[in-house]
Image 1 (cartoon, rainbow over the protein chains, first blue to last red):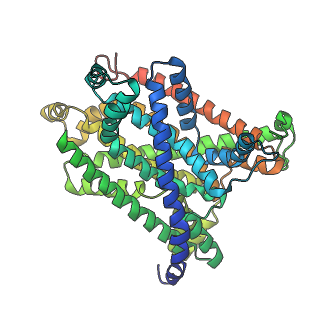
Image 2 (tube, each protein chain N blue to C red; image 1 turned 30 degrees about the vertical axis):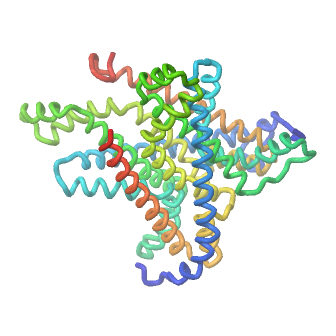
Length: 230
Length: 243
């Protein structure tokens, strides 16, 4: 079954796969998770704020993003971002932003919807007495959020946030539809060039599986540790 | 924005000669729904089996369920589809591999099966959580009534657990439909695929993707409404999901 497989092709492709591909994948994952978390937290705060209109806007945004397939969103932003860039900079024609910027913006905007729901649950898990105590101490709303509510919400939600980041790590493989050289893109390019689809795709599967497995094992340990403290 | 809008594009004939561009998108929608439906049936059946295995007293069944879920959850869906589509036919005996490659509608069957198994791991986790959330007394009462394990699951635990997890199952169903878009990579011309080819033929990027977006939103609205009815219909009075 594996007799006519040539695993040497993987060894030769390793530098390309990891320096080009995996670097792109991991950078995209890390920056998108960070950006998505910041933007998502802002969305969560909007939904929980007293201003109905802000909550409504954030709610529509989140529902909208979560109703669409990621692939479609990737296409949307790929074509939309140059026009937005043109509009923002006032240039005379759509500006080219490059594969990385375009996919980063896509994932930040898309993941923010998911992170915002996690953060909303996190903020709602903080007991009412906490913000009440904070305002009794004379903290403003912003200070209450900054010093009292959000740190605890982040902490409570850390396992879920990391799990979502693992999902994000796997989802970044979908930039394949834009022919970007992320890890899977690199594997696929080698596969097509050398006609070694089986070896390359099997190897890609093993690498994604190993990384995700280690990360989710870490999450379980983290969960256990947090559970003891509470 | 110096983009040339043309909303009339939908009623212009498409280059495939199969009617206009709108017909093209609608045929994509039908394929999305078909793939999603078949994938969901696979996901629900295998997911339920594995979910039950994870709650059985047997260590072996637990271990199998755990391994199954980890296997399907820790690989990107796209990679899994590639494994089914490109790798599996090569690893099978030659005759079987050739048969598989020559199967008509291969992208459709691959997508439905691939997405089905991918989602089954998620269904399994939900069901496990649902069974786990039932009070211990339910299982004990079933045993006390003289029900076998199979009967206890069939008549007591599963009907309760499925009712509890109906809302998350709705999201998983929607995810299954959305995930069919990934099959664009193995050449399935579902809704996103048709929007993409419409864009490539007509250069009307935003009209094509707007139409696809609206169709996805409609599907979402229909599914959510239908599931809300289902939830009300199966609700047990006085219990968690009832009033």
